Structure formats: structure tokens, C-alpha cells
Length: 111
Image (cartoon, rainbow, N blue to C red; front, side, top):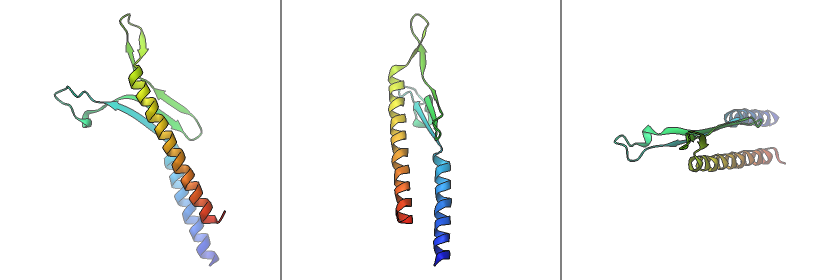
């Protein structure tokens, strides 16, 4: 019986290690597609903003910029706001999944 418990805990720990490795980096990429184009297709989508968030808190974001009439670079606000919502949704989802995993682990070890 103790051997079965040891094997079950080892298996659970291996699965958790794989999951943690997969969630260690959260990447959110927002893309666009020109619907008026003759080649309109979601398969031809192009990236417009990207964020990479690591489990240790390191973060890198690339945001859309465009030149205004004076030639100065400004943020493409609507696209950036959409990307911010995508990032917030992804962070929330990852947090819920990690909490569910931790709750399952607590239940498995009886705490």
C-alpha cells in the first residue's frame, strides 16, 4: 500500500512538473487581418502586439505604434487596448488553472 501511495505521489509530482514547465511562460499575441483584401483569410493574420510573461514576473511587451501627421510615433490605441484585454484574460485564466491544480493536489494529499 505504501508503495502504491509513493508511486501515485511520484506520478502526480511528474505531471505537476510538466504543467509548471508549460505555464512558466505565458505568451499573448494579438493579430489582425485585413478583411477588405483580396487575400482576406484568418490564416494570413499578422501580429500587431505581443506580450511574454514569465512565472517569475519578468515581462516583455511589444506594442503597435504608428506615425501621426507630424511624423511622431504614437501608440495605436484601439489595438493596444484590445491586446491589454487579451493579456488580462490570459493571466486570469492561468491563475484559475493553477489554483485548480493546487486544489486538486491538496485534495490528493488530504489537506
